[in-house]
Image (cartoon, rainbow, N blue to C red; front, side):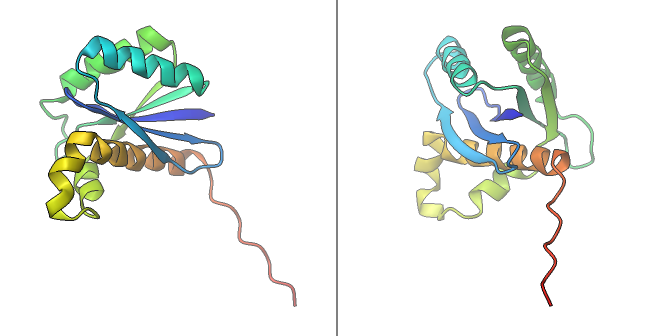
Length: 145
């Protein structure tokens, strides 16, 4: 299992990578100017990393209903499936951007947001949630007496 975590946005797409080891790590966000350039760059990442699964953050409202952005993300998920012929797993992304921003100083937040770092941190949280659900925790080692 080799997964790409995706935090979708219309201007930036955050990315992360994880595998059967069970640890998600951030990748550089897709910040290209056009959608076509972002799709090409995403295709390069998928190919170079021999990805088997795509994990996409899904924008639920706090009450659990699908948000207004959900239709846009549904369309993005359909295009992912069509382009890459890979499974696309939708994962609740509520509060991931808030969590990703919480460790960043307010004075640096604007610059880091524009760079896509916050988006890739959010993608890492999304992917880690998925990996935690899929990969059982290791059993504790017994201590010798």
